[in-house]
Image (cartoon, rainbow, N blue to C red; front, side, top):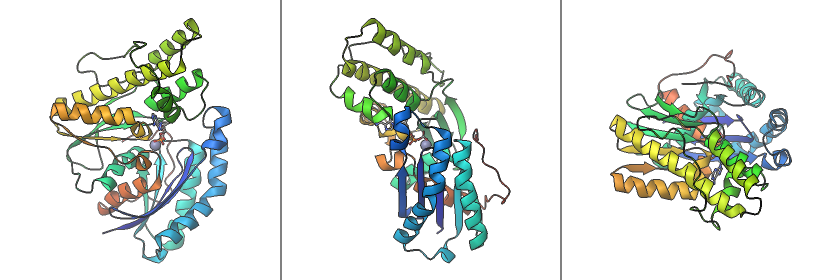
Length: 330
Ligand code: KG4
Ligand code: ZN
């Protein structure tokens, strides 16, 4: 059993959590969505400044809610990348200070590993091997955890935009606001997904990489050619194309490595159409799907803490001179 306090500030959510193995003692998340919405996307400098002012408050709340004596935690964990450098550094500096003051080891966590471990909080019985699709605003990666639970093999990734980024960009084209994912999903519920056959890229068998920039451009052309067309139909057709690509490639990846378990995680995994489609296809294909509840799919510190528990068990600590890496990979 390990009790870990974790800090997540890689993008626009300030979050602190305390986790005891699979049990979440607290998980406070403060989103900056309303601060960045007028700009149509996250402004890195503003994000860092808000983390700086909000982190001490969120930290206090998380500690109070967890009712934990800080001298009894086993480690301080923090996201060290990938993410926005200024935002990451705020969390990392805070975590270093805390680790020094409490005389506890510091665990640096890859944000993507955190997303994967959200599934472990939701499904404590989940063990390797599994294939994981991490699909968020910054990433679309297909990972294979064969035996090492903290070091996956990269099967495929986006060669341009991340899936969440495509949702955000199409929302901007449709002028519906930020962040795009939930807004496109809401519009899509009223639209006809068969109205436009948007392109699905890199669909040849065996290719596990993704590309969403052509899809976004196709949406742009469709809107300029049909200015009176319904936003709902565009949203529904766009969402259908993204979901189909994500589902097909992930299922293909599982078959390719001969693995029966699939973990779907990251902000886009909050999408209901995606969740339904994965469940449906997995049943047809004899695969088992693990998708965390929505609140654990989007950025939060509990997932970072849970990944850190796993690193802590392996004594994978980092030194106090570790730096944040905006492009951190496995
Ligand atoms: O994982 P996350 O909270 O932050 C990153 O690490 O990027 O993911 C945020 C991304 C945004 O691009 C957002 O538009 C997308 O996830 N997203 C969704 C939904 N909810 C959030 N995309 C599609 N459908 C949703 N319901
Ligand atoms: Zn994320």
